[in-house]
Length: 205
Length: 205
Image 1: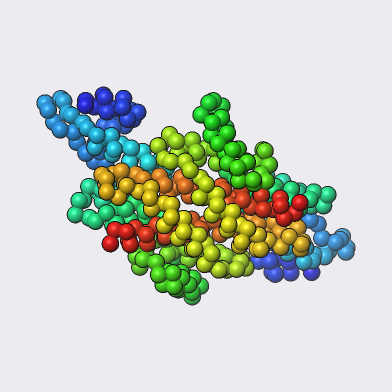
Image 2 (image 1 turned 180 degrees about the horizontal axis):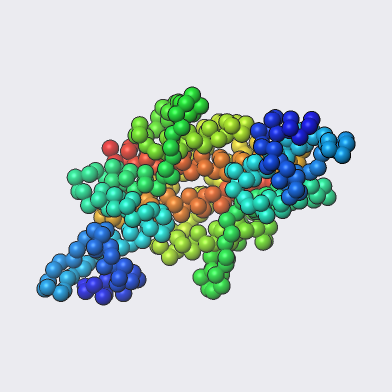
């Protein structure tokens, strides 16, 4: 298809498509003549992925470039490629050197070992969870995360793993991962507050 | 205790305490002399609550005033009081009139009925969930929320309800609700992404 058709089919404005092409987020079409290039399904898939990363993942263009580079590097195994997108979704957490930080990181690392989870030693989620633990401790909250870990494990293994098309095009797998992580995460957060309201209504009725 | 001791014990700076007193967020101490007032445990509890609403709940001073008004209105039952804090934590969602919105709201309302959950008809969480559903539909994601609702219900009924001191001072119950909702929510979100990484590692190894 021509670039105008790519724009019409994807719903992405022409100047935006040209910007993605210049930035290297969208791969070039097949050059048929000096002023004519042909685009195909792979471009539509890429535009969907960019939209997911931008609008739902709320990633910066710089982060999106890294994710796209991983998608395009066919020598990178699927797990590492998905990890690039996944880690980009984690909020940046700056470790605060000191005993308190070390104790929290030790607790996170201990929990991961105990659960037998396969998490990279440098995964940003370890620092992210450590920061939440510190906040909980400072505020006097009990820090037993085991029930939360169990719920997360169950949800992921029984429901969420089935939503990722591992064996299709790489763009589609990353897109499904990002959309699912963010949007089902939002839904879970809202449903948890709804369940709290309902439980409070019953308990205090 | 004197105001200086209240500041030292709570860790809240004196000018900040005076600001809370002026804004009516913190109740006045008992006036012992023209320039001397006595503060007690209830003021320490209130300062903890304000800190929780401000730093963890990230509420505006205007929202905090509403929550504090509910805490101070002893005629308001505990469930409604907790609801004020709870609803203040929900992001503001503007319904977009139209068929798409109505269909999503109908799905949310249907889910709540099906689950038998006791959720106020005007709870902001209904609109919040409807907005996420619309986003999912637009992006072609399956919208079966039943497994998420079940996980939320289980977590709340088996773990979270026990963390709220329903029968203590009203400030303490609201504080526990806000801290727990936000911080365990954050932990759950991080643990879910960790579980995804681990499941992906196993599946794709």
